[in-house]
Image (cartoon, rainbow, N blue to C red):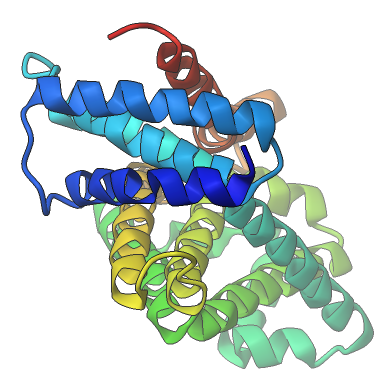
Amino acid sequence: MREVSFIKQNKEKWLDFEQVIFGKTKKNPDEIASLYIHLINDLSYAQTYYPKSKTVVYLNYLASRIYQKIYKTKRQDSNRLVYFFKTEVPLVLYEYRRYLLFAFVFFFLTFGIGVISAMYDDTFTRLILGDEYVNTTLENIKNGDPLAVYKSGSHLGSFIAITMNNLKVGAMCFVYGITCGLMTFYMSSYNAVMIGSFQYFFYQHGVFWQSVRGIWIHGSMEVFGIVIETAAGFILGASILFPKTYSRMNSLKIGFKSSLKIFLATVPFTIAAGFLEGFVTRYSIVMPNWLSVLIILSTLSLISFYFLVYPFIVNKKVNTAHVRPL
């Protein structure tokens, strides 16, 4: 059967599936399970005869959404919050993995621009960070404690202020996606350039290793989280610019829900980063090297696994479940 005929033959049925997914049509779990089986049959057929077609992508999306809907009704005894982080978010991350890749590539490119700009223009770091901050840091370097700025304020006060600021920055990266991603581009660019010039500033004054030991104790999760939140903003913007087969409003609804879930998933990591910056970073100069490196690698590994590796594990598990009878 030609693909056009296959689509024409099943179009109405798939539109009915969409109505179920968006909650416009109510069906009991058994009816949804029956729809799921029919959809999996269509998906298997499309994968066999039209493997590189957008039809496969579309049907796989429908299958994943209906699968989630079925299992939402089967987990009454499970914790909603656990399900959200364990299954729901990883599936969304897998679906939008290209946006995560783009956000990371964009971050490293703009980070590099910050480094190069600071390297060839002595005034650039002052322009980005401000004279007061630069002068204070230079004084701290002379006094043998380049990261003394992190010791200002109480532990708890610093933790709360830093966490609130980081949550605000992350929320802006996400919400600004509503501008078709333009303001998200700006926020991401500014942050990455600032981090790049900031890190080169310490290298330029011979305290690179001391800065790495301190800054990246909290920075591993903080900066990683900002990149993920940037990806959420790009997803929101793309849902407006590229609605695909949906109306622009439905596409925006889908994009907003998905990007919001990704943003919410970064919140625990942002709070953890704020805790480390408020309570631990200030002691980096006196702690042994191995402990600093252990904290940095542990936090980086944890957040990298959750956002970059775990989604593939969950998706594989779901796809394996697709071929099992319900």
